[in-house]
Figure 1: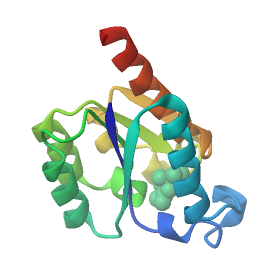
Figure 2: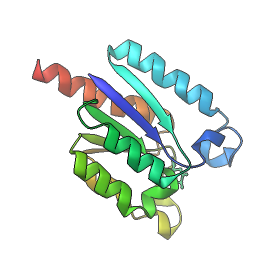
Figure 3: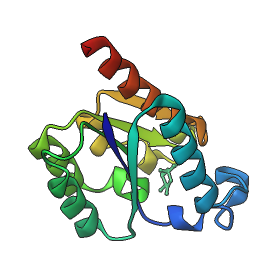
Figure 4: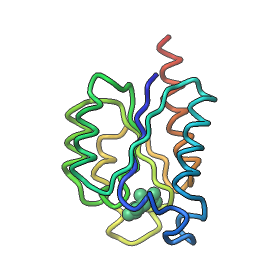
Length: 146
Ligand code: DQA
């Protein structure tokens, strides 16, 4: 099982950005946690972060035939990007949506998730643990297929 973990804009500033909402842990801490969970679950995980919508679309397109599943936190692009939704649909790679914060309890403009429409599972408001749960979801579905 090969997973691609994609993080959208400003997530590189974790630790610094609005720590009351996103916590004090850094993006490096998140990468380390994802790597540790990948080892624990016996899956391969590549991690990609970009502040640019087109770069995220390019990465999703390039994932075709390479990755078994995508874990994505599109960050602000969640609420605006039809292009990321279309890319996820185009490649048909099973995807899970993650948000650190509970977007359902935040501003009205965060209530819409375009990318989420192409995702089979959603982990919202669980902090870093949401990534773990998403990875577990795909590791378990791979185990069921064996
Ligand atoms: C976020 C929620 C988004 O609304 C916001 O724009 C982000 C982070 C989250 O992980 O809680 O940048 O995706």
